[in-house]
Image (cartoon, rainbow, N blue to C red; front, side):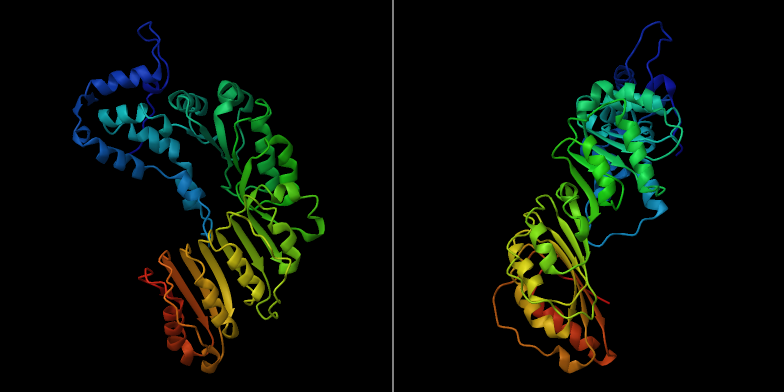
Length: 409
């Protein structure tokens, strides 16, 4: 159903020489019980069913922003789905008078505001969303496009800038970091500092040098939800950036080199460490004494090492997801350490070996079981003759009883 813009409803009108607010017009329309003189059949649904239908019909920004362990590749379809929120919400108001009433009187449905030059009557739509959001915190999503009247937009937000708690620079259709930075600066120029901002999304992977240019315009304590690249050669300059990011890509670096910085990453939830898969395992480093207190995800593509086991031990109470590459020689120690992770929900393991005898190892009997695991994926490489035995061994040894449907690749 194509949404038809109704200027009388969404904008103030003086056709009767009386000025009515959008909220007043919506309330009158809802109380009439009819839209376009047709019976409101959908309005007969119970409120809880109506809310369920409305919420599931809207693209969820929060769901798409949620930090995932293994990222889903970007696609135009995902970008367009997120982008359709304003049109979807406005369209739902025309389904039923009861829905119209529910939606108009729910500020939290209107507090996600998209700035997109492809929206018809953009300024009118923005004014409607700002008004109907009441006093709710605002999440502003900027789609990096041309032909944006930033000064006019600044006027609309000026009295409400203290309500902006989340700012998102969309990465569709994938502009460069320099362009993202320019649109961010254009938005805040007429507003000044956003004192209420608590979370900032740059729209994708962020280089430390780019983030350094952003920091002067961000209030202290603002969390950057993107992945930042760790630069060992210039880590002192970018410490402030790293300490604000929820995800860090350490690249190909030793555990000894990252140990000093781990204790300073107070908001980091995900770390990625790259290593050559044929590299020799590192010894346990005594300098590994602390990890980010909220560390939830680890992606590590190198050989299992005692230092990785040490990180497991330090983060046992917070780790939720892991992706690991394991040589046959490290399976026994891995299984013992995994039993410490009582909050683990997702585990991706790549087992590597070339002969059946490589997968023989002993595991101490234990009654400890991790009941939190919901997803277990096991990937294998090596000779075909070890395929079945290898996976049966792995699934039974890990002892996660609530993982009812492990996936084997």
